[in-house]
Image (cartoon, rainbow, N blue to C red):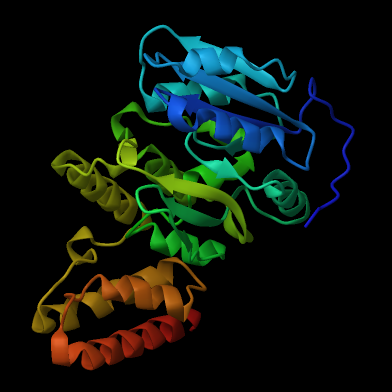
Length: 316
């Protein structure tokens, strides 16, 4: 589908700055770049920062002469948060969009997101995406939540935005840089900060990108440090909402869960108005153990009842 969004901008005066950090990305880099150069929306710049790659990434970048591309370079690797902040600082557009060097943007990605940003009250806009599992070739469509309350609520248990599918108001990113101590979860930390500051979120109900999952990407390196960082960020977010971190979602025995979970769900729905039943269901599930065998129907019924009560109490 083609979307007409008419603006008097050109490559030297772009409406959108697309930011792409690169570190040893030679395998998928050209495909990522070509997917942006094939956009139906013309008024963008593509800023690529080579963060000290030791492979052939720079040779691939040097092969492009398209005037929409701006190249930046680090002689040594500086890390993802530093690279993202430098890219944000270099952006000239009204909007900033992200695409990682191993992902693929669909042709109408920018057009659809610009259309939505220009006609709706939203500061940060994600989108649906296809997950491409490189090792098997399997493709799976994401199941996003689309409303601002649902995205804010889900931030207490996960990152409900796919970072390389995000577009947002450039001023927001320039005023809220990524924090160096949140590397590997820098996007999750930023969304939490922006939510607590009062910015508005949404996810587009259209697929914007193919998000590639492969063994060498940073986000696949699950370590104990990453788990500690997630717990710290979760606590920070709940503190910001004014919710007792002792009640944070985690698997609990039934007797403990039946006291703790309703208290947490009630507080969350008071702090964030308009959380859907479906998202309350997802959050309550974090209080339950998996693989309950014959008890599974009962745990699902418990989950449904608690999510209905939480949504109802939040509306009151």
